[in-house]
Image (cartoon, rainbow, N blue to C red; front, top):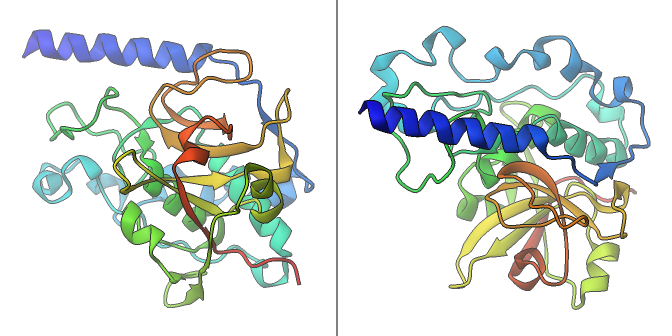
Length: 276
């Protein structure tokens, strides 16, 4: 048991060191000032990570919840719509999605509902989890939580069910919003003209099963070689424009012709409508 714990600590330390050492060549240029876009996430109730779950923080690690929650931890609460959302443009909403998601860059890939859920060593571990236990989100819980925190729109965190949704809860509890399905563009170049910032792009695995989802960054993404960017939570393996391996977890990544984001793409869902 002690040997296993020491090994886990060593792996976690190595993973954290790699995350901290990585310098991404990618960035995002927003058309709104930070205070206007995510001021309420920087200070105020939406900035307090202890208030992100459907139960009080004091109950997060209560042993009585271990069997019920397992490694997923507590469910996220359904956030209200941000103040003044009805008067905001679709472009503001789209950029707010990306700005919100980028606040979690560096979090590792974890099957959690809430990003700051950090289960004790004695809690059940996901047998399919390859990265060391810690704070983080998996792909579909990341997209669900980002939409929820940013706009009060709360999709399911289960990737297949999320990919099939025709509506999502919100903005805020007791409401719903239609979700538009968009079939894939016919060419790589058409992705850049068809998809919009904040769209959800779903990916199949090599067996043809729906298995992944990313946020499309779109025109506001900036890369040295002009490659379009996506924002997602996944494992290691992708390399950036400098040839460096992009760490596990939530990161900006390139949408290249040769990556599974393009070759295994399934379809797109659009929650934020186009500009009128």
